[in-house]
Amino acid sequence: MVKLTFHGGTHKVGGNAVTVKSKEANLLLEYGVKPGNPPEFPGHVRARDIDGIIVGHAHLDHSGGTPLFYLNEKKPIFHTRTTGDLMKILIRDLIKLNSYYLPFEYLELEKMQLQRKDLGYGQKVKLKDAEFQLLDAGHIPGSAMVDITVNGKKILYTSDFNTVNTRLTNAAKIPRKRYDAVIVESTYAMHEHPDRKALETEFIKDIKSTLNQGGKVLVPAFAVGRSHEILSVLHAHKLNEYTLLDGMARAVNQVMLDIPESVKTPKTYAKAVRNVHEIRGWRDRRQAVRKAKVIVAPSGMLQGGTVMFYMEKLGLDPMNSIFIVSFQVPGTNGAKLMETGMFPIKDKPTKVNAKVKHFDFSSHSGKTPVQSFLRGLKGKPDIYVMHGEEESCDFLAEWVRDELDLNGVAPNRDDEFKI
Ligand SMILES: [Zn+2]
Ligand SMILES: [Zn+2]
Image 1 (cartoon, protein in one colour):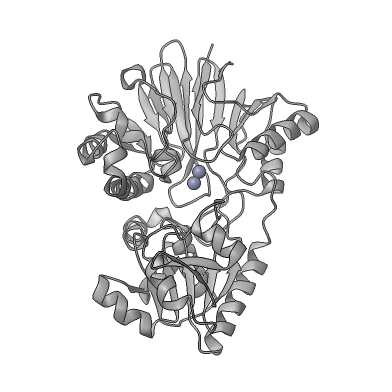
Image 2 (tube, helix red, strand yellow; image 1 turned 90 degrees about the vertical axis):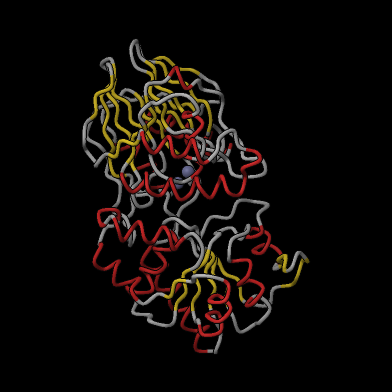
């Protein structure tokens, strides 16, 4: 018998945590947070009860809470090398911004680094009666799905995945195994993404039209992956204007250059970022913004980060454009900007005169790709749906029951299942 327990990330995006427990082994699949003040944690899992942690990718909703397991224990933590390096950057930043609210400090992050077990895709690991490997998830550099065999049961945990090729990542493939249980994300289970090629063409056309009118383009983007994909798109379309990369995206860029296997085409990527100007401080930032044509800066939802400075500099001029390329959680500055055209500049709600437009550069599978993925799985696995808004999780679980005639469930927090 194997027991699955859902500790977090159920009926919502943020704070993924699932345990897979057999007679001998107890594996923790991710332990994320939902960033905010204070950050939200999944349900309590005792550090001494687990044998190890497996993390799909570095986004904080999957990795942010993991140092909590290193207050006293020394359990191994498994992920790709890229994920490990990116986690170091992202969790360091999480601690810097929220130290008051967090139950761990830099010391625990350091202690966790000592237990790192970096894995390549397809590299098998045995832990008591469990065996597992990581498979490329195509979501962001270093991202992985987790394939586990324990006590004769085969389990797939998708974490976040994308079955469409992007400039940075290879598409996730449908594993050939017959699984007994599949735990799947549902972020975009109700939403189709536009065709990637057409989207890129429109994005580049709109950038050129802004530049031709003498304006500048600001692209608020997530610090991991999206910023770098945008730079790759600019390069692929030979848009060689003076481009700035700011914020945490710079450190992340260095990880991708240091670990060539983290991106699909390392040489092309290195070329794409060669001429990008990396901002090194406030004086540099103030000077560079005058010369820059395209600026890529986190945070993607315009909730802090250096993008706030650029909004102040560029947001009021109707010649400029703000091209939003990330998902906007309702209630964030980015979502409000798209709905109302207003933005807090120097803490005062201000009318933005620059053109604001959204481009759906997603790194998650959309509605049809998620369905094709599940349809393509062999055998008759039970499907557990998580990591989506309430209605998204329920929608996909219902689709699984109605269309695939499989057992589709959208668990609630602390729900347990025997497989
Ligand atoms: Zn993610
Ligand atoms: Zn996620």
